[in-house]
Amino acid sequence: MAVSAAGAAQNAESHFQELCGLPIDEFWRAADAASVGLATTELAQALLTVGLKYNYGAAPGVLASRAQIAAFWRTLQLPDLALAHACALGREPAWDRFIRQYREPMTQAAIGITGSASAGHELADSLYSEMFGLTERDGLRCSPLAYYSGRGSLKGFLRASLAQRHVDHHRRTGRETSLPAGELAAAPVAPTPPPDVLAWLQTCLATTLSRLDPEERFVLSAWFLDRRTLLEISRTLRVHEATVSRRIGRLTDRLHKELLASLRESGMSQAAAEEALGTDPRDININLRSLLQTSASRTFPEQSVSPEPEQI
Image 1 (tube, helix red, strand yellow):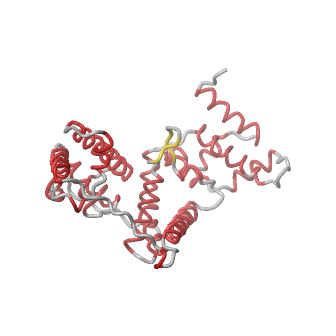
Image 2 (cartoon, rainbow, N blue to C red):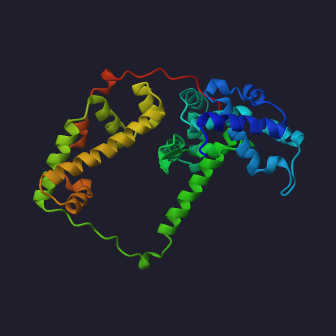
Image 3 (cartoon, rainbow, N blue to C red):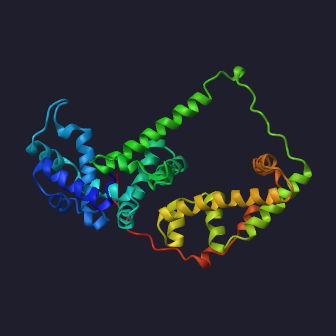
């Protein structure tokens, strides 16, 4: 029999109290979960998941008592746990707090890990975008913050995530460049499309970009041409960084579909149109900056910079 959402919520809270003998409200208040938009049942489910994963702090195979279970949950970083899980669920109050406390420290920590300002910004931005839950799994939002257990500080979790991502990047690039120079195969060079295909591509691109509104042009220009960070763009537009990330994702997806449709309308097959979209941008005689140019400074006034957050 299917269980309703209300029934599932009640089951999580009642199961929580059954295990430790205490109501979830006590932990909910200690976590200050209301301030980040996390419901009692959502905190109960998060604590149950963490408890099951670590056997409530007991040795493997040992059945933990009520007192041990309650003590285990009390040792967790409850405010950090509530914040992380509320962010993973996309709660705006949680992201407001996360941005204030951790966005800039994340960037500084990434710069320290990479030893480079540009590489540090790129590392922090890549992890930050993923934390917003831009990726989906089986149609559901997926954020690394959902895996935070509360056993250590959220600062430590973020720093470890940045370090691991940096190591993974070096492993990938190491594999790509590990062969001696004499054994490296030349990368295949994509043939330059015929002049008529380039002409159609240039026309379709110019037409598609001309349909964008000023704010969309600004976002694309700032992100792809000026290499501005999500934080900088969000301050200019006075929106959340999550909103900027989603806009970039939706814009690029829409542009790809519209360009593909325009090329198909010109008489190209699906395969030919896809191949044309893979053209090296240097082969296209078009000024993207001119097409995307917009008076951003007049249209989108800069937001005042908030006080410096604490360092990670």
